Image 1 (cartoon, helix red, strand yellow):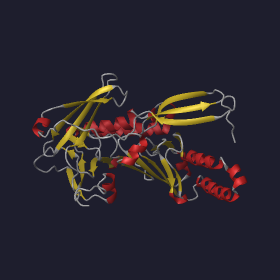
Image 2: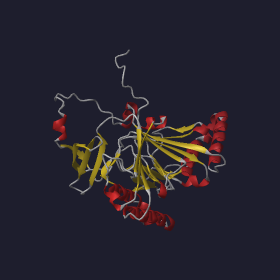
Image 3: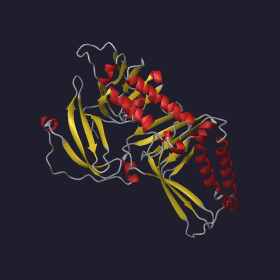
Image 4: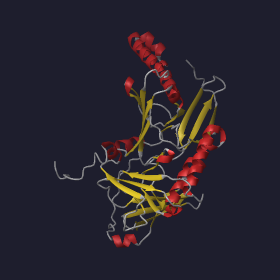
Length: 410
């Protein structure tokens, strides 16, 4: 058991980026007098718009090496052991799954000598539980690891990226008022004496401007918002942010209407380079699949976009290749860099019309769109399917608990 000396030590801070995730700050304290060390992590960004739930089926020893970012507000559960580490009981950490288990074991072992002296029965039960935790590291049996973070700032690595990870399920959800209160972001509603604007024609012809902060440098910036009617589809809201400080530019598209009764799956067979100029609306709930590359982009990635098919493919390449920290520095390995470089070359071939592939837009909310160049006639290379959402898809969209009638009932 280590004894703290309370003599001055040194703390080092490192700003780094987790691949396919975001920037974090690693804080490492070392005392040269008593050799005590401590490492913590903090998110370098803000609390996300939605919470995140990671569910990982740990099947092999290789899974124990997955990188894990666990923020202060995240809870960790292993259902098979009925084991839970509640939120805010540990500092944030950057580790692996094996490291998480080691940290849990160390926490339980910390007071064992005192327990053995004061309550041997309890100490014996905890010792048995510690042995069960240690056996998990051998992965003799499959178990489930669940990390639930209402702040959205936790992460489990996908070693198969950019391909889909079949063992890992990522669910984004809307925080409850209780979550907001715990995170300290609950705000009281302010009374608005201004008369609401109900003139939709005026709003369609007007660009609304409001103040915000840049998502990159956090400097004050302006966001422009406008209602736009997409031909043969519906109204959408386009939001664009320009930062004068760091020159960062971003745009996002939100659906201007309600969630459709049925989900929409659009499949386009690319037969000509001119297909790259098709207008495309990808909502924030839309997944993008390219079966020939075994590639799937989750619905939370890239956000909502109103662009062309070429623009979407370039954004995918930038996300996977150009802006990927695995491609440079200490994180780079020859095999991984070659794999991602090959993926980028295949995207370039698709843009140039040199690969025969299909692009699938799967939107359970039904708010995505791909231009039909033959409109109003059917497009022979495009297939549009309407489907009934599953319970899980309705849960992701927050529809299962939504009440739209009977408010007056007591």
